[in-house]
Length: 403
Ligand code: SF4
Image (cartoon, rainbow, N blue to C red; front, top):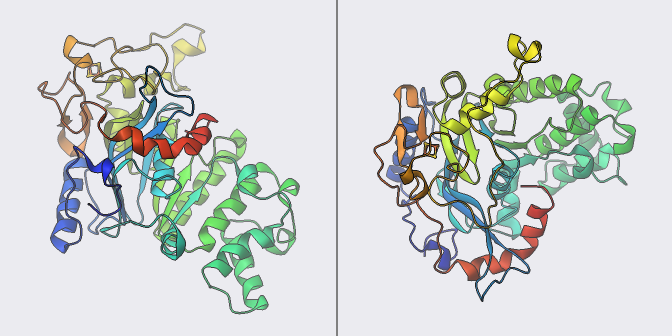
């Protein structure tokens, strides 16, 4: 059995060997084909061929389990001092990927590797050690902080858990330093405050400080500004950018706003209905989008220079309709029911990757040769029902809007 993966879930998936230095080098060379100007160093965190399926609690129809195909065959790499934006509509599987990477969910199949080593642990001291390196910032700062505890408590917990403090005075000094690092100053005024005494932006700064207290190498920011007032979003984005530079953090920035991806991240990955459809350097993806779904996202974003919109004229979007149900997703390219370029083959199989200059790539038959990618063509069916039956509680969370 491959490391870090349930035996049943390995069916039909080929995994690279990852324990040898040669394997790590292979992984780095894969990245070269995906993104331009790759950093010299190896990725700190990688996901390879990740899949996540959730079973439905009351899911059986004619004896068959019903399954939410939340994430299909997704691979990505995070590098120190570099940000990757994961972009897509609500329900596209972005947050599920962050939760898989932070080990809040177990993948149905696929491998997560930290510094080239597959991550196997799902509990205990090994998981705690992993979370010391990989921290998450959630969308809603109010629900990610405990309302009955003050700021000191929230920041002292990770310091104590990872044994970074030796005495009370040392703890206080480190907490004050953390508050200053996220620009909550004078820090002494914030240390005794409770979440309800802080503004939305201040709460998110405390949540970021809490993540930094573990001294992570990777920060997974799941829509960190979408619940904040527009006026303070830029401040929080600038804070994250500053921390990325100063701490040399590898950043996964999850957003539904493709315009902020260009501002924030060196690389962009676009997801639609659980499938990654386009990726590459942010400037390339946003200036010269190839996939019709990326074109739809960009054309739907507000543009202050759009004179037609300013005059109240309606714009024609390149596609329309809603994101499909992931319980019975469309076959082949999941975008085909909405795509104005759809061809017969689009509903039959998922297109292979087509790579353009600069490391920009997409999965679309408009550019490819029409061959199928066996890893992505169809959801796994054999052996899945048993695995996903253990994930019912996770699906409840998924279904409650954190997908
Ligand atoms: Fe449209 Fe076909 Fe391309 Fe999918 S593969 S985006 S349906 S043209």
